[in-house]
Image (cartoon, rainbow, N blue to C red; front, side, top):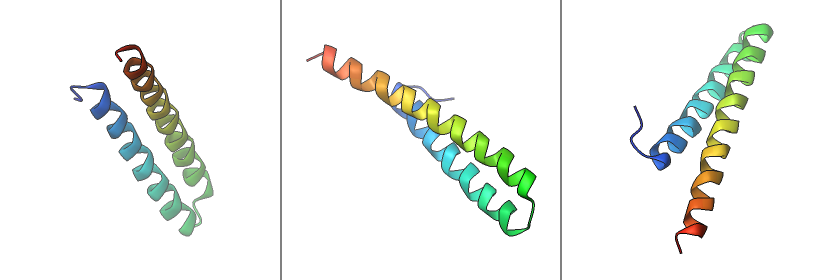
Length: 64
C-alpha cells in the first residue's frame, strides 16, 4: 500500500505501463477484446496517476 502521494502516483504509472504491455501482448495474440479491456484499464490508471500528480503540483505551489 502506497504511503505517500508520490508513491501512489508512481504506482499508478507503473500499473498503467503494465496494462499497456499486457494489452499489446493480447493484441499480438489476436485477442482484440482482451486488448481493448486492458487498454481501458491502462487508461484509468493513467488518469488516476495524472490526478494524483496534479494534486502534488498544487500542494507544492501552496507550500512555497
